[in-house]
Image (cartoon, rainbow, N blue to C red; front, side):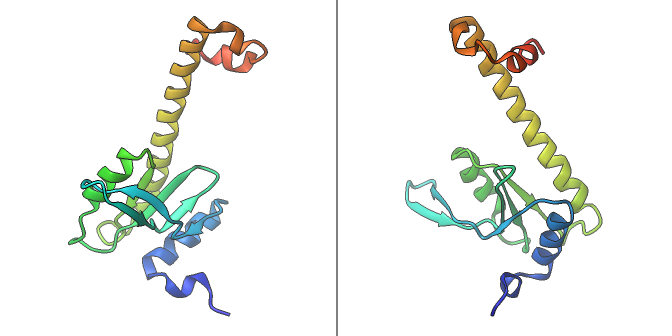
Length: 139
């Protein structure tokens, strides 16, 4: 029976092994539906989807591919995609990945805190019973 690893590049296999070693379950080439800049529907498949984090990872394999364009489209649709360039920096990609995960989580946390503050001003009854959220909303 063929393995998902059969279709992976060497760099993708390295990332898969690392994600597994740090306890992150992943899906390979999980499809995303987006509209490109000309409003055409597209299905793109970043290399990895991490369900626990709601993040995607694209292992960049070419200097010639326009990853900035992909990043722009993903951001426009609210998808968090981390681009790893193992060919550029084979020694530092793991650190880069963890830093990006932390950066995205910090951004999400800040957005949730803004929402909680807004709710506490306009609709405090909605937050009754959510004391852990209320304690953190002062941050």
